Length: 107
Image 1 (cartoon, rainbow, N blue to C red):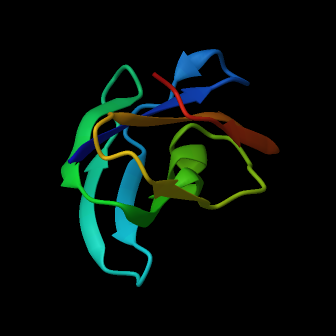
Image 2: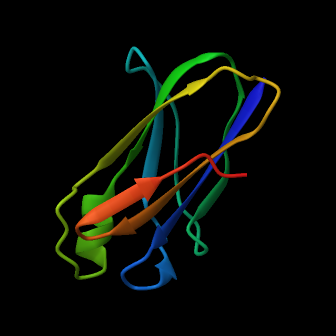
């Protein structure tokens, strides 16, 4: 079964995005896990033993922007992804700034 981690970097400030609440849900909206990013902007083990399927990560970026005195366009980021290979670890990082974000399959 597959494991899942994430990492949020505030690219505008050039720092890890600490204390961002991240929630993992199944495709049908059932909450599977939630945690906050650590001081390094990471959640190293958000979930494990995930089977094949479509999942969603919701990042509470609005609270992060308020806590860091930034105004942002995106109050939350929802990343939908599919696990097809349960034998690998999935790492889903987010590069964040107030008016843009990107994500990718990390290692």
